Image (cartoon, rainbow over the protein chains, first blue to last red):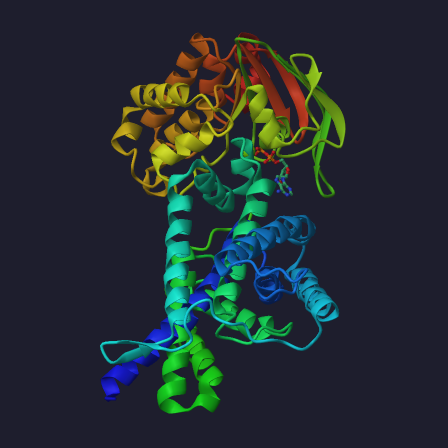
Length: 297
Length: 235
Ligand SMILES: Nc1ncnc2c1ncn2[C@@H]1O[C@H](COP(=O)(O)OP(=O)(O)OP(=O)(O)O)[C@@H](O)[C@H]1O
Ligand SMILES: [Mg+2]
């Protein structure tokens, strides 16, 4: 195998893991821009969403084995519902200082992590891919089918989100309400409901990411910590609050991580990717896409 | 149409509106005038449901509305043109108008009204696909007015619509307000430009530091020598 095809293979792996980070980063950015709140429980919400879908697939509930696509949909919907509940918890937090938001959301993350340990045990498990486990060979490049699925479904979700936000009345109202809470509500837009929908979408996307990644990663109650942190770094990298930024940030973070692991040193992977984030932010503090940050009213 | 009784509104500890009572009569333009910080915006925001009074009632066609949230107030037929325009900057002109009609579900009616807005404000039509943030100040003011009208209000709350506009645009804004009123719209107009607003209004309320100093017909206020000196620059 030549260097070029190894490089391309690494790149595809990076895009795959980057799609995962992008889906997580979207949750941070969407909630930040609509509520002015940084949700540090998001990594745990990703973990919960993974369980809420995967348990139906692996027979953890009443020995049921629903098909992977059905488990995927159940997980996304249930985690979306969790997002709606979260809006009620976050509503008072969003009015407080950053310190309280930090404490509140980090605390909530601990609660979710511990609940998962109590219900499922601290031990994790591997999940069988619904697709063949053997890598497929595309013109000399080896790719895991599950990785391709992750990339394609993530891309579809991101395109779908953009279409929803830019063409539907509800999507536009969500954007309007993120721009100016007071004026949106004076136009008749129920701002709290828009925030709930935002959290539902963010949590749903996190569940989607987790269920798609489950056959590649190891499912366990602590799985949200690293991914949550990287997704947050990706959101900052792209410009916190920006939707295209979250996508770009996630992909860049994933690719940098994969390339540094593949070609430099796998033990420094994390350090290198975070180092890149710091460098980018020093050069361009508003992030890659760097939309003008809309003042919180 | 609107009866405000003994209204007190606070920002935390700051007592911004201190026991105000007045009436906005159906079919009329009532203007609230006063210097910076007099409390005009606070009153308008309290009626719009963006602030809630600590004491007092606001009756709309006889029913108390001071506890309702802003998104419920607009459904009752009260439209709001905010101070400083505050159009949604990263939505297009078209989308801003669509948001103004958020609570309506009569699709064809909404399109009809949007076309009517474009007739009244031809500049907006030319820019219908442009982001509102890229419009000039005057165009944004027209858009803020049109957006409020899209909710089909019976009563329009307008907070300093002439603020920061060139004289020719100020004139245009006052013409539009007069025209709306002629077609039956009840208007509560907050203004620092007392001269122009008293000219088009039927009633006026003069505010000083959270209290009403004078309340009378616009004509009487224009003839009042204190007001002439303090607000109309006469003498
Ligand atoms: N968000 C706020 N927080 C604290 N105090 C406020 C706030 N908004 C207004 N105030 C205070 O309330 C009082 C009334 O302000 P208001 O904005 O209603 O005045 P106004 O008559 O609209 O003035 P202007 O002509 O400058 O718009 C002022 O003393 C002002 O400083
Ligand atoms: Mg004001």
